Length: 310
Image 1 (tube, rainbow, N blue to C red):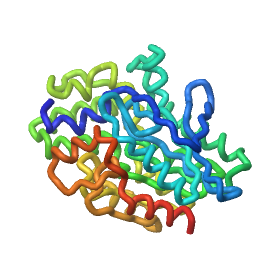
Image 2 (cartoon, rainbow, N blue to C red; image 1 turned 180 degrees about the vertical axis):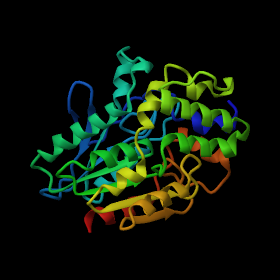
Image 3 (cartoon, rainbow, N blue to C red; image 1 turned 60 degrees about the horizontal axis):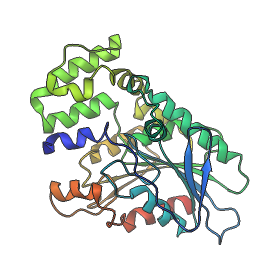
Image 4 (cartoon, helix red, strand yellow; image 1 turned 45 degrees about the vertical axis):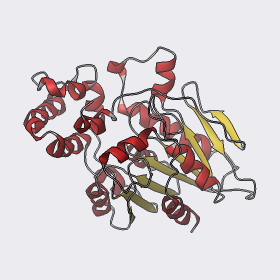
């Protein structure tokens, strides 16, 4: 695969890898389609609970997809647990649908991810074991999480590597650096989807993004503007991005900060999109997506823990 397409392909491809066990974990089914893992620290009578919403693609509770096993969300959850913060992380509905043979791409709807996040949030808001509820949304899950965070009972919200623009503008910005010759065709196709619900005359090199079966999902995703949604929140907000994130640039976090001036913004040096420390080139960055030996950065755990516990 050409390197320039790798980061865009991550938006759409892969299936879940099996979860790993953790000795204090409790598996929970929120409903027939949402399964996840709850970690509750034993030292705190009523700990705060962080609900972790994963990024794009069929991503499991640990942050993994087929052939991309890095355990980013698993290590994040365990790091927070070690700081006496309870966590719940879950498999995206696509994981179960694909494994059961029930997934049809043309039926995928961004609004379903929001419904799932709200169902989880309401489940734990009514759970008396927890003193406060915090939502952490990663990448695509940042937008999902900020919409779910408007539910009554959510106390704080954290965006991890979340876009500050609508998804079509994010992809256009990626193409400007990775394949500038395709920008004009992509922009016209996104405009067609936004106005007409479908695009037909796109460059064949953009078929991964604009294939007909994916267009309904893109249309549903394009209906939400992260800047509009984050501005609606009336709870404490933390925005985090790594300066070595090749999928979501620091400028996206800055756009969220502009829309929510009272939010706390933290840029973590050398952190990539999956919270790993990368000091080398793009190849090292890419390889980290399939390296479960790399821990998530301590500064990330410390930053999130401090925000939640203060």
